[in-house]
Image 1: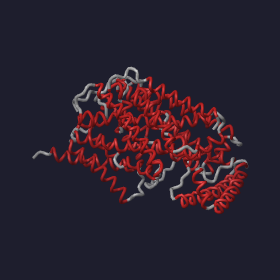
Image 2: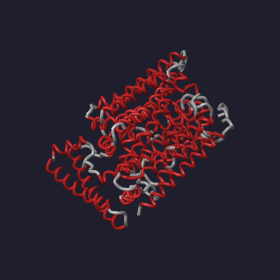
Image 3: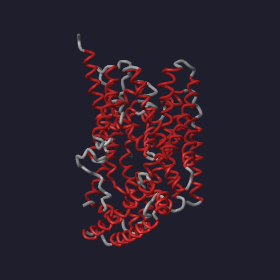
Length: 41
Length: 548
């Protein structure tokens, strides 16, 4: 795979987006979990 | 539907067509046509990926699923964010950095031409067929609800999409997708707000009723491999499915390799995951609220008007008796639902809801016997609600959003089908040397061909019902194995023959599991295919590199 260029090292955008994405998923899962335990017996 | 609704739909169709076609300006070579000269901003690519995945059936079928089955389908997407992160740090840098047009082109550089040709052929067959079913599913609903002919329904979605995709290429697909996803989200939020306003009980009361009917159970931690939607099948099987889909399917790969840089490509992929679980939860929750809405408003016994007419014609007395029983059960349920939520009142509501469900099941069984088809009217619940209860204007916006969802999903796939046809077959095997203008012409012709093919498949798939299921399951037979080949590509000691045999072994393993134990959920097929392909590929590669 020597002909494949190495990825660039400027990954600030990726890290920032990653944090936002994960925060959004965790918040949604938490909300769904709360809905389930609050309203489902 | 009033005149204003039809005007909204017409304005939407004209706008999409004009906006898509004007993107053709400046597209003079195939790199511009297929990859927008790798200049698209990451957020637009991310929204485009999201729009491509969101088909019309998400809006009408998934909401219906929310109404009948609750939130548990959301578990299907639990693996998605994880898959995006894995792809962002592994495959995306390789594919973007390799400056390829297709994911399969990369496989020839790494292995050989036969692995490239087999994977790209599998893609063409599966995506070509699935493109047809994407149009077929909403076309069936539109023709049943509006009384249009099936051909007209297919043409309404297919023709404008083919025109703007053929003329504008990936630029048109991406920028139209951005507007379409905005329309879809707006329509969903508007419907949700309308539902909350129209409900005769407070939101907390409504959620208590939904919870009592089991509609708010989003997490199922059971270890049942025959159950399609559990936390574990979503997290493990779903991760492998999403890795396969986003990492190896050209309809997705093509979106992010058109981004400006590796960082932007993987950020765009993450962007598409940003709203995925929240959006699916919103879609399902809308369906759940539709269920609560129909607790207080009388829904039909059968939502599919064609089924209802058929049953009424063949078994009128039986249908009338069942409808009467259903009506009585509905009234008892509505009375139980109006009581303030308490353990006793919710138990009573649950019992009355079971009576309603039993009458519905019996009616669906009757429809199955009369029509000879697998009668599931899940896809007709949301359209029924939209046409009968949404205020004027909003119904038109929702139907336009359904068209937008179908068109965005089809456009992305048509563009990728044309790319693989031209790059992996025409340029690779038929005319390796030709001017760019020639390839551009062939690319447009290929887009038109696949659009026509999709419309023909849609017309037949709609009348053959079960074909849609067959096509949807077809992809799960080889998706995992193709992922296995891409994983092998990242392992330095893997060799070409190992990868090719591994791909075939992976597909054979999935076929064997499906034949021997058909009850195993298809979500696990991807895990089995990928694991077998990697194991066989590595063993064969090790054998070939052993010193004599």
